[in-house]
Image 1 (cartoon, rainbow, N blue to C red):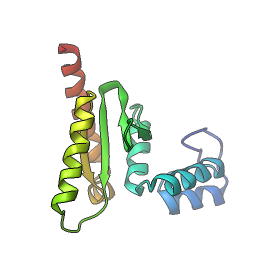
Image 2 (cartoon, rainbow, N blue to C red):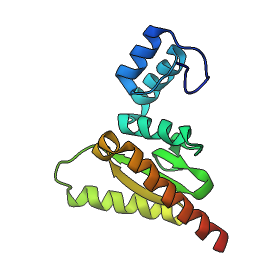
Image 3 (cartoon, one colour):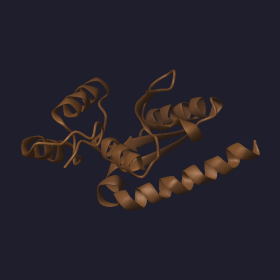
Image 4 (cartoon, helix red, strand yellow):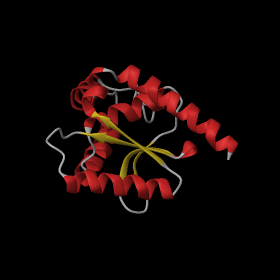
Length: 147
């Protein structure tokens, strides 16, 4: 049992606390950092789990990346991919839909592709979600080379 960030050996209590809270192995230092990040940015738990799952397979994601207008849950800058984790399932108002469209347009104008993933997909299908994102990354790499 080692911290996914610093590779430090974890105590039983650190392991238990981070697994219960975030579902990933982190030392107390990195757990506190995540606590602060969540408090400041309201980062969804699904974003944290997806971030570490992507990191584990060699993708270099950034958690809560500032795109110049707002904070993006996860960004993979090498292929200009922004990933937003959707946590609310209430009826989408026309104002919210328009805001989503404008945010996507802003990202696209800056050369970024934005995808939105419901948190329940990450909760129940994390491995499949990671595999789909890998496919998206591979497609974006091909398009970047063409341009």
